[in-house]
Image (cartoon, rainbow, N blue to C red):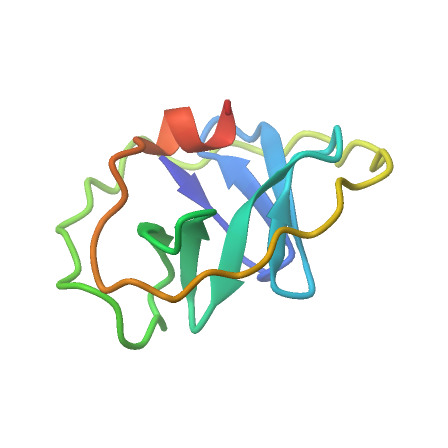
Length: 107
């Protein structure tokens, strides 16, 4: 499971830093564009929902989430590499992505 507590950095519950939010885009620290962050939803590059924050608005019916293990201490935040060009934001879809959370962050 993954979370953000500042709408800037995304962590696994193990404390590992996995991605960050820049403007409305989600990137790996290696610079790969993964998707978009808008209205509390992280969406894949096809506009489909992958994750949501507790304050997310709109979107498909929220799935019950397993809160997972206790959140571990966060790792140090790595330095950011040059980012890919931002992808064109497609129409927002009110449906869930076929990608699992793990697949989304490991694309």
